[in-house]
Length: 130
Image (cartoon, rainbow, N blue to C red; front, side):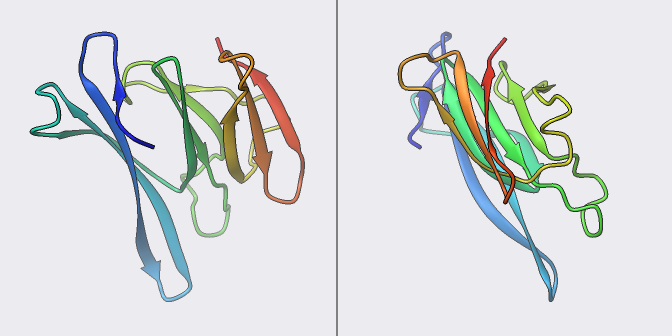
C-alpha cells in the first residue's frame, strides 16, 4: 500500500516486518507511520505483533491478527479496526472470528463499508464496518 491522505492532510503509511522469536517461529509485525510534512519525516504511531494482513477503507485501518495459543499468549486473533491512525483499536470479532488466524482482509469494491475476511483453513467472512 502507498501512503493514505487523512482528513487533516497528514499521511499514513503501514509497513510490515518480521521478528524472529526463536529458531522455530517468526512473528509478523505491522508499523503505522504518520507524516505531517508531506512525507519528509515520519513518526511511528503504532506497532502490532502477530499481524498477518492489513487494509484501508475511508481512512480506517484494519488489521488481521494471528492466533497461536502455544507461542503467542497475547494474540487474540481476528480483525481489529482503528479510526485514529492506530491510537485506539476496536475489535470487529464476534464468535465466528475469535481465536482465528486472519490471512487476508479486502474491502468490498462496491461498498467501502463492507470487508471480506479470509481465515486459515476455516472460511471467508463478511463484515460491515461501524
